[in-house]
Length: 176
Length: 324
Image 1: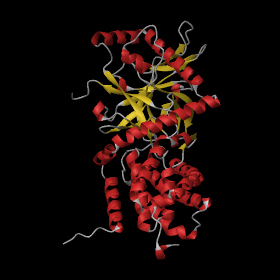
Image 2: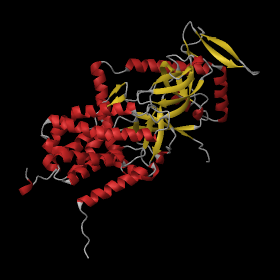
Image 3: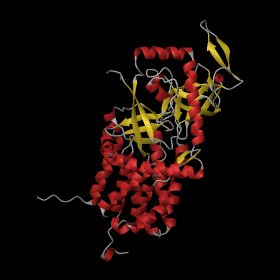
């Protein structure tokens, strides 16, 4: 991994996510639904990383950047969840054609579902009693995951063009 | 002896452990990290929010749905409501009393800009570019910052500004350069408030008044055609309002108060030290009977502020803080 370039891309992705992406949000009876582009970035890196450790480290960096961009208690939760989910994507990527948009959508959906369901569960635990409960945020997390998955190919396409800038190509026997 | 460079697995294990520790620590222990990146994120956030703001404006102009009609309606409602309050004898006496004691109301309004939105739409929070260096503290209320044509009768400066703006939330964290705004629609938001019952033209509202010797009396408040519209019952209903991710909800409101769509939610006791009346938060959209209590209803409130397009705000800072 070329970490300096990767961290610049992470910074850009998080800034875009916290400033412009809310234009794509829409309001439903569940609450606001919107895509989470850093998740697509983490999945993309996990699909092409040279090792599971690189994938997990990259996922951790993306999650931690998201944690720093806003606030509330639980700084570090997104980092843990992203690292774990990215490692999981790395483990299963052999079963998929990673250049296919459908693969990207399925994996991003599973990634987001894992991360956001656990994140929503944690929020419910820390909220004061008498709040919205767990089921509505859980269904909202499914909708967020689906929306992110639908737009994942749009995120992965430009990332594929700069893939060699982020991930050093394998050499010799590592070539696939 | 040369130290060996740690392997990537060791680094990953260390970072995961650090994340776990940070997660378990109270927010104040890890707040400095988020605050440290504020000077980097704030200017980038300003630029990004500026782009988003202009895109939203252009999209509104192209589609003809720039919300100007809603804005006009809200403006008219607020101006009329402010004029109505001033006409009431008690409010005028309070205003005169305040004016004798102070040149203006005991609060300072700090301008702030929204530089970031929650990364995941499961929470309703914003990042502001004013922090503790500007005086912002957790618990401070935040309102919109809208400039309107001034009225002929000029109220005190802060009253005039606050009376024309809507509460959007509260500061929950404040670093040196930035602060986190929890919107009124955030599921963790909670606020004591007051519901003012609107009297529609040609109609009346019934209220129950407690008698000194015990018992209650039913009073009917009729619409007065001599006074401007809208009119409200002068005895608000104290409530506890919470965010629910979409809007606000008030539970366990006694059904006898007959809360209806169009009634107004304002802040409650926390602004009594600042203003003789509350700051406007939202409007009731519908009520629904409580499933487990036939004598209570759940009231759903829509914030009057445009939270999706929020860009500029005021942080209301009490001038004399407790203990100072």
